Image (tube, rainbow, N blue to C red):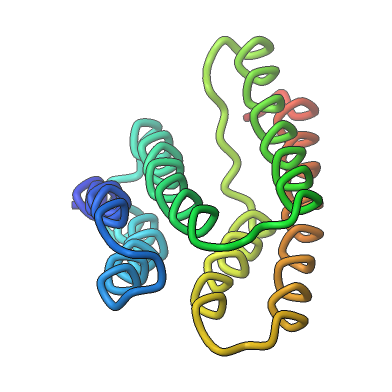
Length: 167
């Protein structure tokens, strides 16, 4: 059941590609994808269905969901270069830590820490405000705060992957 819920997030991500950014349909699939992300792990624990596959499937679903959202946002807004560079650095830290973890442990390691969950929740909320009538200064403040939080979470995740032999 939990993996079905996770699979719904993948479908939502793919459907977002067919929607105009910040449209009603975009937000329906975006919110549904967020709900599935919030409940799949809880359902797995409650039903005793926690598995290594489920954890990796969840991470893959997050990626498949996030990429269409990012594509839609980036192609619908004038994104400043500094933000694209900062976001790229965060992506490099996360990708590099996963590659290094794979080299070290010979398998993909995922970190479902409280910090990652809080960061993900905060970042999830950002698109809900970007399409509205918020002043550009408020949007810039939200995005900057999200980048700071994501940078800290990515570094912490890297330290956890590379510094913990018990993963």
